[in-house]
Length: 356
Ligand SMILES: Cc1cc2nc3c(=O)[nH]c(=O)nc-3n(C[C@H](O)[C@H](O)[C@H](O)COP(=O)(O)O)c2cc1C
Image 1 (cartoon, helix red, strand yellow):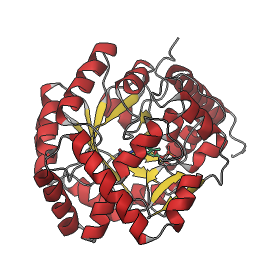
Image 2: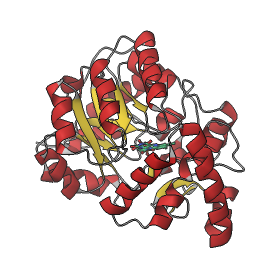
Image 3: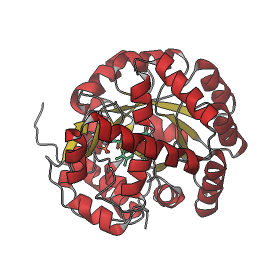
Image 4: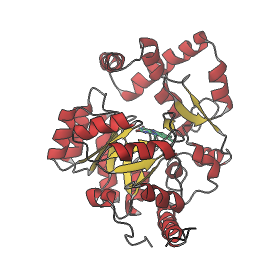
């Protein structure tokens, strides 16, 4: 049985979910099954769309709606050339939340808000939170350095208060959360809730092959590494033999692999070279990335797919937060959400302090 709504925060108010818990967008991982299981457990599930074509995204949205009559969200790459088309899908299908990996343009935020969609960009610094807040974002999600996937250097315990001090909009805390103590602590800081990636990846409702999920559970707190070798950006992954090799590999071997994977990604995504080049060009012009880094970045989706979908841990990348070292089971989303809420209630009741 799912737990009755217990904590009302700005996150539950804005999105209409029962509990201030978010299952974050994770490429190749956060598909319809995980998102609908999260929604049915009363939390906010977010579909990851960066690894889906437009058609696949529409099918996934329809599937979630068929499995759960609850609010949910979609995670988008704000820099993708078809971001406006993807936002149109969200509008047409009444998706409740748009989550962005990078800051969306003010016009896009305005369009989504006109249609009552809650806009929640993920950010890694207070100055970015200020910028998106001034552009009209409804909420931000921070991801501390301990989090899985692309990540920054500042830990949640420092990033969270710095962002809470910088903006007036609600802040959801992600990076390192897994239990009721974390939810209680985040709310005590002033956060509107917690977001979790690795913890939801490691549930019974996750579509990641079970032997891969079991492999994750073997890793300890020192079992992850942040590397820029995969795609030129800091990426937290399980420290597997494959990653050790990638870190040591020479430029030539890496480039050969990159070109092969880029071609595979092109075939899978169905995107014409024109679009890939256009997206690449906007990445080069939009930031400090060189063409070499952009080509390298095209490598990542296929390497992640090999690990997370095909279960090939010897030739794939497995994004993971440091929190993996504290996990030893694969609960259902419902069990997970229920125990986090019960754990937070218990912690708040038994705070180890006396005051007058
Ligand atoms: C396997 C995996 C894939 C991820 N893919 C994405 C993604 O596609 N878009 C995104 O904004 N964040 C992505 N992230 C980051 C998560 O959304 C989330 O911010 C992070 O996992 C939080 O830290 P935690 O792992 O400690 O819970 C990914 C994380 C993991 C573990």
